[in-house]
Image (cartoon, rainbow, N blue to C red; front, side):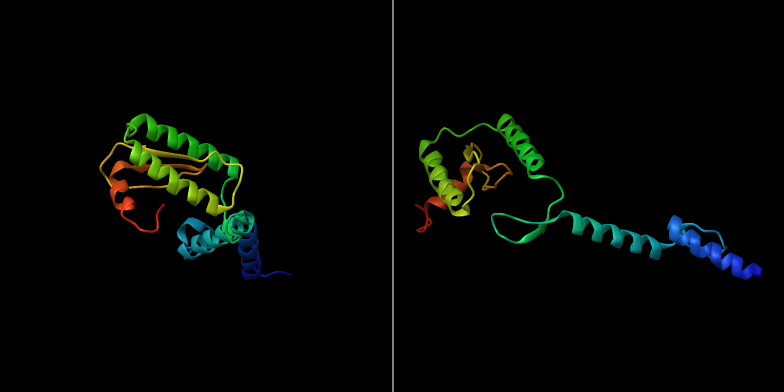
Length: 155
């Protein structure tokens, strides 16, 4: 025969296992009142996400957490790149365009990745900035070109 306290502890254990909730100080089962439970649940979710999303990156050979398929990442990169080109004017300085293309093509060939449509663009801005978008799209600003031109290791 189960005593009242045994029934209560058995109920509390089954509530935790099936509803992810623990009794609070008042005896009510409610996970939202327990920061420890929230931390444990978040840690478990992070572990599951890491196990599901951990894949080997072809370029580096390292394992990384990839939270979206490559096709979706490329689509986002193309969209962001097109948005940059719509909002910022392109540079017409042919010397800078040639420099960015030479350096960009060297970087592209060093990755060893084939099948990407590499695109290097010079934005008409005096801010010093250059970055790569997913999908092999790489805008650079006109402001970054004078400093790149003075580096002896650039072609």
